[in-house]
Structure formats: structure tokens, C-alpha cells
Image (cartoon, helix red, strand yellow):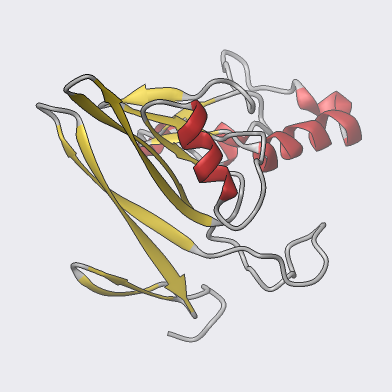
Length: 184
């Protein structure tokens, strides 16, 4: 599992540096990580989760899929995936937009055919406007995605999975994600 730093994680580090500068570099003797670094607070090393950053870098590629945060939003209502598939000629999965988007372009070079696929799975935050810094109800969708990869050919199938009222339908059945504050 790889956890990619985004703008929200960068805001946490910036806030610590700005509001509590003297604590920003505090670390235990012999420790590489600062006491307030997100990697430590989330205990990522104990969970075998790799943390990549900083925010805004080029991302990384794994099994022929490029993963990025895409710090630049190209528009709304699916425009980011459409634009991304025009400028990135491979399978690209990105975040940042909080919208669920999928765009596939067919690229032909003689007899050779490849596909430029761009996908944003949506978000897992609230979409009703209660997220700090947002007014009104934004055009966001909750969602995740399933990616199937043929490792021999690096062909990919991407399946968007929309979450509506805490419920998602997958080919494996119904998933229910509840807010931890609710009674189970």
C-alpha cells in the first residue's frame, strides 16, 4: 500500500510549521521522523504503508499505472479526467478533484492501438458542504475504484464504485461504510 501526500496532508505540515514552529522538528533520540509528522501520527511504518511525497510531485508508476495527486484541476463535471487523458498517454489514476471521473481515449499508431485512461475515484469525505473551507454543497461524489490488471500485458480495467448514502454496490456484493459515530 502506498499513501500519497496530497494538499490536505501538506496543510497539516504547513500548519504545524506556522503555528507551532518550535515543535515542528522535535523528534525522539535516534528517530528519523518528527514527533508530529503525519507518517508517525498515522503509524504508517507499523502498517507497512509507504508514504510518498511531497505534495505536487510527479507521482509514481506501478504495474503500468501512473498514480498522481494532480494538483491542477482542469474543470468540473468530468473535465479533469477528459483533459488528463488528452495530455497523459497511459493509465492515470488521480485524486484532488473529489469527483468521480473516468475518461478513455483510443490512440492509434498504424496497426498499434493503446488506450489513455484517466480515473478519479471520488472522495471519502462528506459531500454536503460541511468540509471546512467549503460553502454550500459542492459537486463532489463519494467513491472508490477497483482496478484489474493483466500483469503480462499491463492491460487495465477500471471499475468506478460510487458510494451513495454510505452504501456501495460492487461485483462482490453490497458494501456498507458507516460513520464511526453511528450506532452499528
